[in-house]
Amino acid sequence: MYFHLILTDDCNLCCSYCRAKAFENLEVSEGERAVQIDESLPNEMAYDPEILYRFLESDPSPTLTFYGGEPLLRTDLVERIVREAPVKRFMIQTNGLLLDRLPPDILGRFVTILVSLDGRKALTDANRGNGVYDRVMENIRIIRARGYTGELIARMTVTEKTDIVEAVHHLASNADYSFSSIHWQIDANFAGDFSLRRFRKWADDCYNPGIRMLVDDWVDHMETEGSVLRWYPFLDPMEDLLYERESRLRCGSGYANYTIMTDGNIGPCPVMIGMSQYYVGHISRSHPLELDHVIIRGECTDCGIRTFCGGRCLYSNITQPWGVAERGLVCGTIESLRHALIAALPRVRRLIDEGTIVPGDFAHEKFNGCEIIP
Ligand code: SF4
Ligand code: SF4
Image (cartoon, rainbow, N blue to C red; front, top):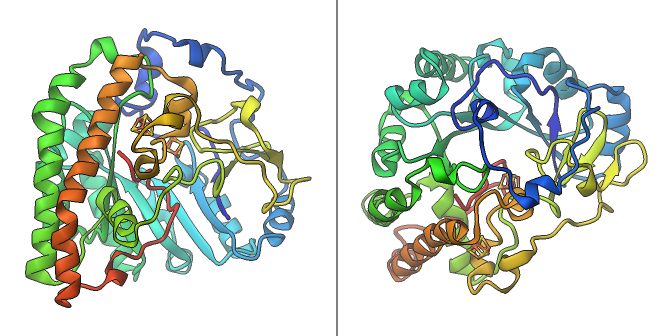
């Protein structure tokens, strides 16, 4: 089972699409109003780690992903848990500003490190703060120099300011960065901000055509280089298309991937902090393999591309900050992605038949913090 572990709610950044939204006067949907938030949730992990270890011991193969806030604000806890917990696979989602605090022996225990970054320096700094890009890049250089050889995923949040083709090419083309993989998620239907956005025009004119171009680039690379670039929004769905597999919610939240809150309660997703109606247990009394499932409902239930999309996001599915028509625009981006991948499928199959690539080139760690469907 996969678990996100919330170490702290504090963060050392206030990114425009994340914490900064708390200062905007946004609309509140019916779904958001219906959510009860446990306001008594502690800011920092507030239970004895031994309780966590006993819980994890009952899982034969747990994977633990440190999450926040910014988890490296509690480097002390990261080090302690990595050294003590009965866990073989660790991952972390971080803004990268404090990555240089991790010593080599701890770094070496991470199979995956996800670092938030939005493409080029100008856009990253505009979204995340002046100087962030350079500092993160320096830290990436430092951890590689310290011998970190695991997967390093550049994780972008994309908005109307993003030229997706340019951003992906930028992260993929500069060998100095040493990112093994790229993932992105669209900032859409996560807050009541649609009226402040120009989402429709961007999706039609920039994002959807950009995805079609990127899928072509991705397959061109397979053909010329004989390898599969680890661009997660393409990698995971294409592997399923090759094997003709149907997918549930691709991030795994609520059935394969759960989140341990700072008080030890267990919820379905790392964004559903304090959403106590959806808690499925507590580390002091639950068995990790017997947690209830929280499933996608509503319009996704009857959607014709549900087995491709999986429902995109459980949090959005519950809170529905955007209206029906606006959500349809987000679904349009998913349909567009699906079309582009299906159109590329015969070419990918041909490259496999010819031996240019092999199906195993699409293998990857599931539920590693990538939402997959942007
Ligand atoms: S495309 Fe839209 S409606 Fe269909 S499963 Fe995905 S999120 Fe749900
Ligand atoms: S995609 Fe949605 S449900 Fe999945 S981890 Fe992200 S916020 Fe949670």
